[in-house]
Structure formats: structure tokens, C-alpha cells
Amino acid sequence: MSEYLTLLRPDDWHLHLRDGDVLRDVLPHTAERFARAVIMPNLKPAITTTALASEYRSRILAALPVGSDFQPLMTLYLTDHTPVTEIDRAHQSGFIVGCKLYPSGVTTHSDAGVTDIRKIDLVLERMSQLGLVLQVHGEVTDLNIDIFDREHYFIDTVLAPLVLRHPKLPVVFEHITSSAAVHFVTHTRTRVGATITPQHLLYNRNEIFKGGIRPHFYCLPILKTEKDRIGLLAAATSGNPRFFLGTDSAPHARHTKESACGCAGMYSAHASLELYLEAFENAGALEKFEGFASKFGPDFYSLPRNIDTLILQKKSWIAPASYIFGSDEIIPMHANQLLRWQIK
Ligand code: DOR
Ligand code: ZN
Image 1 (cartoon, rainbow, N blue to C red):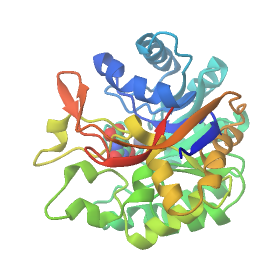
Image 2: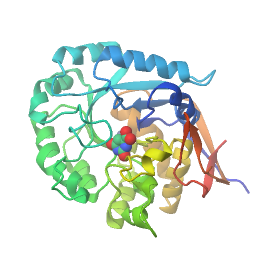
Image 3: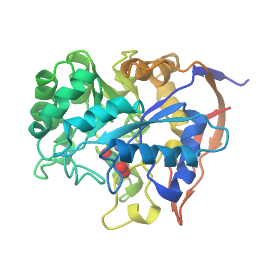
């Protein structure tokens, strides 16, 4: 007997689409599942102005499958030199929902990011006044700090002081990966939330090294311990509205990952909801999925919840070995592996 799960249509609150021809390769996966997605601005060159965000948004809309009413929610990439007037323009645009803090050097295309958080205090103050969300990649960039501790250090040295210095600023701690982050988000002031990816709910760091080095399990922040994974799963399935869905699906051409210095990022857009459902079902918490996927995100961003629904069916399928990505290909999460749920 088939089992169905009907959800208010979900949104993805953290997504990388890239640009150019490959948009057409990856966008349909997201548009099939989600009504909206928050689009990360770490292109080369980065989306640092409202004008660049507007052009990027138009290219995304033009690349959508015919008939799709998917809405990209745009973000600005903060730099040491972002002017306060740019925050005003972003707010007035009506299509920019937040500004992304990449500590400079922390991850893919973050070299133009912020070198010292104190340099953007005025920008953050203006964002607080306007209610614009700050999306944070929460890791310190000091390479002397152990890679598995960089999120924890960031909380203590940057994020905790920041949320006190800007007590009204809405902050999303993106793609959290540790029990320390769960603890921080649970206990800090109001208007601080967090997104959680499918990979951090499904895997721990052993996966990167199973029988050899596996570059398709390398993302940033890096997968952590099993204890951390269990803490994240407990948070995602808790019904606490501070925790919501953000896939961080991040496509990279296969040869740039299968390399002596491989890029960070895992591609999950082809089966994002299906992957989350594996995790929620394993935790016996399917009834908690709709809040996490469809309600808490729009509530945090003060946007209306979607009104249509999406049906998922419990029917096994095998995720493809690869997808076309321009002239190359992407190796998706769970390539060649069985998934228990599919969208109807
Ligand atoms: O693994 C990651 N990939 N983490 C990030 O923060 C950026 C992303 C990307 O853009 O590829
Ligand atoms: Zn990301």
C-alpha cells in the first residue's frame, strides 16, 4: 500500500544556483519542489549591489522551465565596503530578503567577503532598522584553528557578541553543523534562526574517509561527529521554529571536486526533500517535517506561507549517477543509491 505525505509547498532558505548556461541544468530540480528559494550571492564577481542582484534575478527567471512560478529571493554579498545606501536600495527593491556575511576566505568565492565584522557595524545597524535578515556563514577563517572547531570558535568570538551588539537584527546562522550551534540558537535572543542541510542530518565526518577520500562528501562547514549529527537531527525534528530547511545545494563540476584540491559543496537539489525525509523518517518524526520545510522559514522571514501543496509518495527510486552541468557533469548526493520517497 502506498503512503503519501501532503505538505504545504516548501521553500529552500539557502541555495546556490551559479549563473549562465548551467542555470538551466540545476534550476528545474529546485523549481519542481519549492515555491521560493533564497539565492546565495557568491558568484564571481559577487552580487554586491541591488543592480547586480536585479540582473541575476532576471537571468534566473529567464532560465525557469516554461510555466514555473518559482520565485528567487535574492541576497546581497557584504564586503568591507558595502555602503549603507546600498542597504536602503536593497530594502526598497522588494526582491532582496537579506545580506550574506561571508568571512573573507571562509569558503567558495568568499575572498571579497568581510575581513573584520566591526567594519560593517553601520551596515548591520541599518539592516536592523529595516528588518533585513543577516545570513551568516558561521566559521572563523584562521587556518590555525582546527577545521572541526571553526564553527564553535565563530560562535564564541563573532556571533554571540554580534547578536548582543545588534539586538534587533534578524540573523540566520546558515547550515549549522554542530551541537554547539544547536545550543547557541536554542538559547540565544529572539530573531535568531538557523538552516540545516540534508547532508548534515544524514552523515557524519566518517563518510568523507570511507575506504579512501571521498570528495563528494566535502562541503563547508565540514561534516562533524555523530554526536553533532544527532544533535542537529533532534533540533530539526523538535518543532522549534528557529530551525528550518536550507539545502545549501552547491553544484560543482565533477572535475573540480575530483581533484588534488577539490571544491567544497554537495549537490542535493535533485532530491532535497526526499533526502530530508530519509532523515526525518529514520528519526520517527515525519509529522514534524511540514513545520521545518514549509512553515518556520516564511515565518522567520515575515513572508506568507505558501498556500498550495506538494505530495510526496513513499515509493523507492534510484538517484541518477550524474546530471549534465554545462559541458561537464555533477555527481549528486546519493548517486546510484535508493531513496524511499519521491515527489508525485
Ligand atoms: O560547501 C559549500 N559550498 N559551502 C559554502 O559555504 C559555499 C558552497 C559553494 O558555493 O560551493
Ligand atoms: Zn551555501
